[in-house]
Length: 585
Image (cartoon, rainbow, N blue to C red; front, side, top):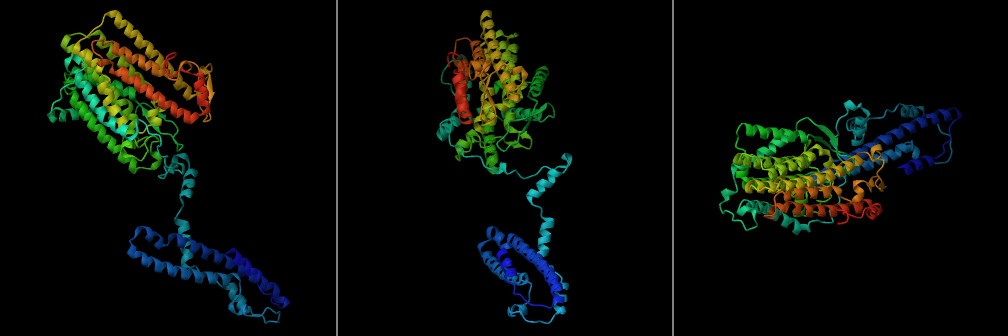
């Protein structure tokens, strides 16, 4: 279009005019040329808007094949009208009529034509249908960018929450290439064996004095599916959900997501823990049958397992229907079984209710303490006393849970929240595995009434306190350093800078080994099992399993850090050689 306009003005023939009319006509032609350029701009704008909003383009995607023929005919008419308007625009751009185009280029004496000049001067610009449509679109159809800019220009209290994602949020998460836990076959195997293991160990502990043997399972399905047990389990989950939604406790921000934003979390876990303990005390005071938890223990496990599968299915469907940028980097392989187990979505939420953050610490950990209290209460009702070993283990495990809930915001920096999606692995682990398997020591001590000499109990208590001291000291040092690496109270600690802007601790607790908090965890787990003696190896399942779990998690974490920090991580490993236990591993 620019070339044609430029060529039209450049090839205008030179026509001689009387001297008294030359200046007046040049001014009139200049005015006419400007007005014609404006008309050309309006017509071109109308053509662009017409092409964008033309119905056949929409019909191509939304209507059937039978209606496409009518769209083609309409588009043919549009091309004809556009060609006519384009020819008119070219003739107008040259600023001369058809009769003037046929005149020879030789300079001759011509008569003035004031009527034509007056007519051209008074010719109004007729508003066409296309120009009206352009004005209507420009006035009533703000673009997405202008809407965002207009919203940001308002005062903070008048800004609205935009219902469309940022450009960074539209980017889908990359496909998961490195599959863990043996890939599809390994995750399928774990989905089958984890529920069976939970039932098998608890059934074994209820027979033959908790010694290793093959337990006998009933063939009657009513011995596993119980309505009362299902209502108890759902009631407990609902009760903890209500406590989670209470508008009490501090609100903290999580780690920065790949989209650049941060999620907010309400940390009232310790308050929920205290309310749950008060509710259990009230149930005991009013003589409610709290022993039904022990009586229907297997049925509760089955109810929790079914609930975990249903919830995992809901989470997977929700993730498939949700935006791609919310998917978990470790659960986006494209395989249904693997993604179902690992978790397809990173932070699934229903409104402001964060399902993963809630399930990580609330129903399972608090339920673990309540089950321990049920065993302790039953023992007291039966014997009239609180056995030292059982009481000690119940107290130590309650302290462990209270510590986790008091420092609830520390979980926001763990791999479970940052990297792992929320699928069957975490759902079943949080809601079934933790409450019904971590209580094996207290169940054994309650049913077998086993006690150790007082000096053994003192040694076990000291071992637990040492483990807790290492666990809490290392975690507190890590959390404070992550909040503010330049805190004056941490000025004595050495660190290594990384390319991501973060720093790696190489002194203090974290100079002894790479995971000192894991060492404290293992020492506490060992102390709880030592209180059960050596008559049966079953209570030692927890420390053995937990050690394997922590070693596997340490390997996963180091692989992730090696990819993230690269050369800085190599220098860190050269400085801190031991992984979990100094001089051992």
